[in-house]
Structure formats: C-alpha cells, structure tokens
Image 1 (spheres, one colour):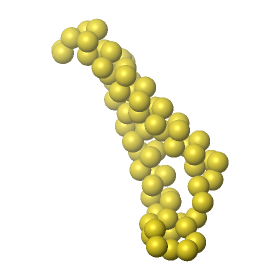
Image 2 (tube, rainbow, N blue to C red):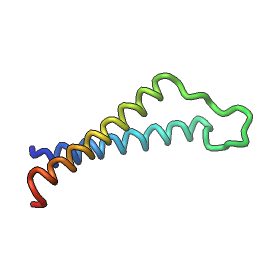
Image 3 (cartoon, rainbow, N blue to C red):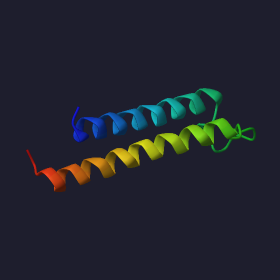
Image 4 (cartoon, rainbow, N blue to C red):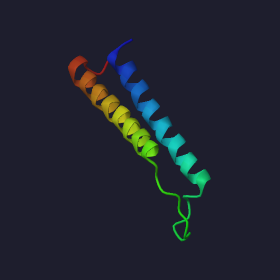
Length: 73
C-alpha cells in the first residue's frame, strides 16, 4: 500500500464519517434553525467530528507530502 492509497483511504473515511454524523444530526431534527428545541451536540458527536476532521486532514497532508516527495506518477 502506497502513501497515496493510505491518504485517499483516510480522506474518504473522514468524509464518510462526517456525512454519517450530519445525517444522524438531521434525523434528530437539527435541520431547522427556527425550531425551539434544536438537539444539543453530545460529547460523542464532538469526538466523532474531531476524529473525522483529523483523519481527513491527515490524509490530505499525506497526499500532498507524497505528491511533492515522489512526483506526480
């Protein structure tokens, strides 16, 4: 497995995790800003979002590093 493969996997996993968290929040009713009872974000949701953003950011950094370190091919 090359560094680019690992980077793409990290970026996709972070993206899918964030999309899953967004869908979960939307199903709970967090889609309406005019609603009086918008569900609060839990500690687990914050941790999940942090891990997803970290994975996507690490994947992006690894991809850029491998691009400049090993060339386009």
